[in-house]
Length: 622
View 1 (spheres, rainbow, N blue to C red):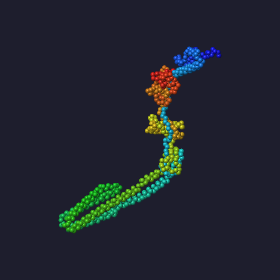
View 2: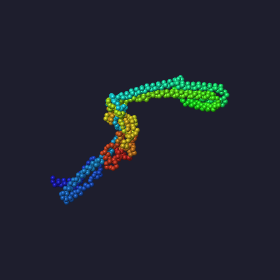
View 3: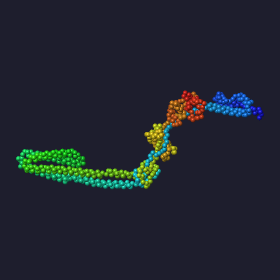
View 4: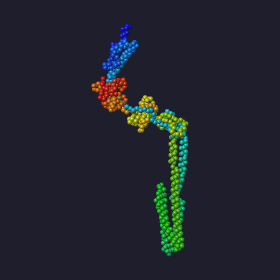
């Protein structure tokens, strides 16, 4: 290479004079501008000028500086200048490329703002919404088999764990020999007591009947003796009266009027006593007769009224006696001056009268004693009959015999024996709380779920549900059987326990995980749109974007919504079948960021953050 070639090479890459500098700058600018022109037609001259670095020196200025430096500087400084110019060229190229890329991205973003809207068509769909709860499957009815008898031997266990039994089937049989012995002893004691009571009843009844019969027939010895005493006393009284009367008639015709008056008083008083005694006797006889009639009729007898009559008669009798004694006293005073014979006869008469009255009293006493004896015999009969009442013993025997069923332990429900804790030869535990077996009925199973307080309003007993057994990947139908009235609060969160029942098949086992679905809405053939197309305004209303009539902009249209299944939402008002709605993709991060690039006010197409036109604006449609 000659000297001229060497010089040209240095100008091009090292000296960078005005001509060379302009060539390099124009080349860099042309390269950047060409790239931008190809990819971003919207990139303006102003933007091209703006990307030129302000620090790049003018070509003539650079050449002058280079010439001056060449004439004054040494070779070392010349090399440093060459390296600096090379770096400057490299950075100019990088800056141009960056400006081209930036311009293309801005142009692409503005173009995509209109293209990014997606279209959805209003159409009819089925929308189903439901609440979902989780739990585990378990049998509704599981019973522990208990023994009501403790401390006895198990003589037979005819079942095994895993067997299916029906309600009433025998699970175990206990040794009942001790109970059988108690029953036999009780029966023997009752028989002996019944025999003894029968003898006592017969004896008491015989005594009562004999005495009653003797009284009626007049054969009672005590009454006979009392009656004989009355008869004897009465006979003596009659004799004394006759003797006295004869004496008076024969020998005492000339007695003073005083004696006669005294005698008359005595006679009158005596007659009064007789009448009173007779009245008393009649009252007593009437009482005895009435009491006997009541007894014969088996009716209770009221002694009060008859006792009053007797007491009145006895009072009258006592008063008559008092009058009589007074008359006798008067007579005694008068007879001092009368004949002794008459006095003696009268004394005899008085004695006879007293004897007669005493005999009457003795008879009455005998009657009362006989009556009391009859009452005593009657009471003995009643006591014997009460002693023969075996009601208590019969109840005790029935209780013992009723205990026999406790020695044959049966299944309380139909189902499968899931646990068997007893075998032949075991002794039942002293505590009656020990379970011998567990029987589980798998015909009906349940899932216990927890329902949040905000979901409880959608549930009620009897609601149909679907139970999904996760391990089996199979659905079963059931219903809500029970919901707690009171909430359970844990860590400040309230929920309600509920029970779901369902009919399983043989594959469902206790403890399997289950998902319970309660359908809230089951809508068929209703107008709906994608959830992504639904927008919410600040006032809480809902709207969608539709194209304006000119087809160049998007506008809001208010809608009324119904149920949603998470993907689609029911439209109850505002749209018709086949209408088109538009929306921004829910996830388009690159495009979304592009909408905001180069501005602090939001998307470049006039939409709000959701992609919808701001109030009063319309998005430009391509």
